[in-house]
Image (tube, rainbow, N blue to C red; front, side, top):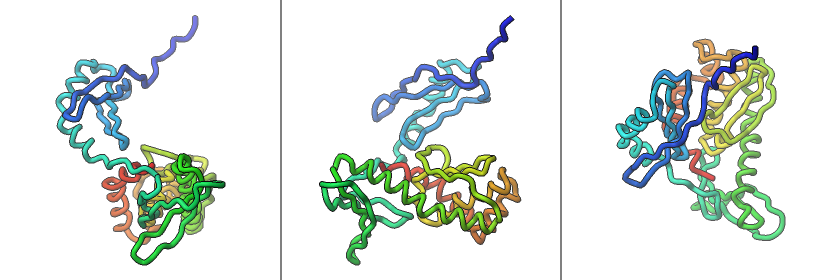
Length: 251
């Protein structure tokens, strides 16, 4: 007799539509049999996601959304406006504003930093065809994140006496960094847009996981040891909660 297949832990259901003052908003719906209660997420890109436990009907889910229309509208208004990576735009590099400038619209596309006058912010220069500027700058910023943050990881690892595995930089939405049991680290490339002490905190956090793969008091003691004092740890966590979403507005 063939074994019975268990239903998936999560499955996608048809989206719902919620009428807001600014117009209709589509809400993605996910049914999760591990969920104990309704959960509504407002993602940094403005997408809405409703998680339904298996015992809750879609009708109840829609009523849940209707009750929270005002809250949803407030959260959507707080999402920073999208800032394209185009010529003339200012973006922060480790917290310092840089203005994007195109130097040459012909030839091979490259990007680099350049100082400007005392009254102007530093420049992020790019060459090549205008339609390729966004992709070229994104690739450059990913490489710059690696160039700046890998030495941070090496410095913290040496202090703790641990070995680093692979280090990768990617586009992430839910986590600024992660650490695997094998010792591999992963970071959001967008940390290059945050103040340097914030990027350093995230790196220290993940390197500390190489000794303590948990969030126990011993883990937080290691993070504090790497950064020098508890106030820096507290301030960095608060900054990421309050300002972190702004790093997703660029691109």
